Length: 371
Image: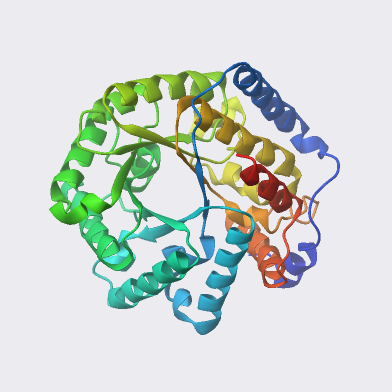
């Protein structure tokens, strides 16, 4: 890790007015992709949909481990919640890992933490969506992974009673962590095993699985699940328009609903082809505020698209950047993803505790308000 003093020194103000030369080509490419999608959306219309818009409650992610249990960490999580509420979001998304809830010696502490958190969210009249995260480990069987998901689901439903529970995320993400989902058939098998293991008393919770693309959607479309989450990250006309149209239409034919989740994946076609959506060298770009104008446009596109296809729920990922950002410079350009994200949150924490947002956060307040 870089020297702490260097990281702290780089944590200054929001944004770069001009795109640095080394990022210009990618910036222009992403801008053109957004232009193409926005042009299509501008000519279409959809049903009058009242959209619930959620932001990630990043300060309560179970990946933070036992740090969550400290008094200051709890107070900070509530401060983040209040700032998200102030931006106008009507729901929050909480990521909880199976390894924290199942088998850990302090699993009861995690359960108690999330029970109290859920009460705080409800007190603010906000909805709750929980996303189950899987640990890395390619030596596990599909049955073991499914068992851990169903066991974690039971705890989450009991302690938090969320409105929605995402039991299975993007298969590419799951495959990167487990090595188990090489084909759509694998995804169907895992989904079916998880759904079979869920307690029959879950009916008050909306169960979500990722739709990804038409091929993977078709593999699981007939299974007893209420909601399919269309996850957008890489922006092309194919993914943002054609795939969304196909999945929404097929889901409607089955009497099921679609949601949308996304954040702008800042990758070139070459990077996307080489490593999909799990490349840390690409993910680190989220921390840098130079991308904020494109991030704002992406969220607006997501909401327009949701209205067009009749998706009533949109979840925005990476919400720490509504409050902070890292200036792209000679000092920061070589930061690892973990260091850049640490720096981002240091900046975001300062703004959150001072009850301020950055320009992107202010833009989100306007965007969410007019959804």
